[in-house]
Length: 200
Image (cartoon, rainbow, N blue to C red; front, side, top):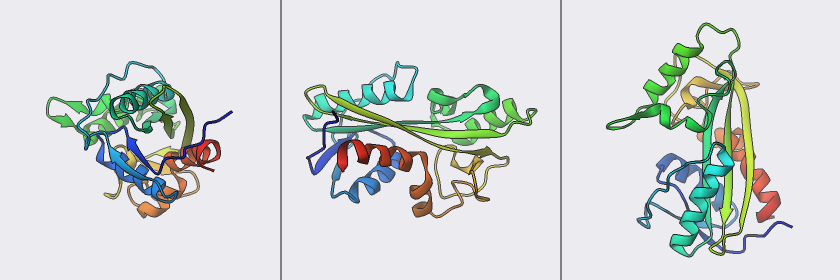
């Protein structure tokens, strides 16, 4: 039996401004306001799992226990079929540099490794996990499928958005209107599942 979310203010277990903005917008539709882990000064736990759900659970539980609030964590990534699903859970790691994350570099790495393969299938995954301070968790996984393109296109998204064109469309995630992306993204798919489980 799923546990329903009854709180109207929760902690978003993220230090990523883009993710905070997208998740806050989706939660606002359900009358739920948020405070981010960064705003609360919470540390970022080590993500030691090999699945999106696993890493999201680590983040959600850490934030719930530290804040005393229900916490929502998001672990998402970009996967390329010809790279056996890489970068996958290591999506952010591919962008790491000594001075911060460089997604232009990360996208170039994908292109370099995958350019000789005809299979251009790619997908974004998003795990959403709600955690309560008592340790209870609810998790879902949403996906958005499409193809990767080079060179990157658009400046509206973040992360790997400029190199991903969702199925049935001709524009990248970074070219379409953010409201349209919210409607069709992997995060939106995960939110629909979370809504059915915990928000409905």
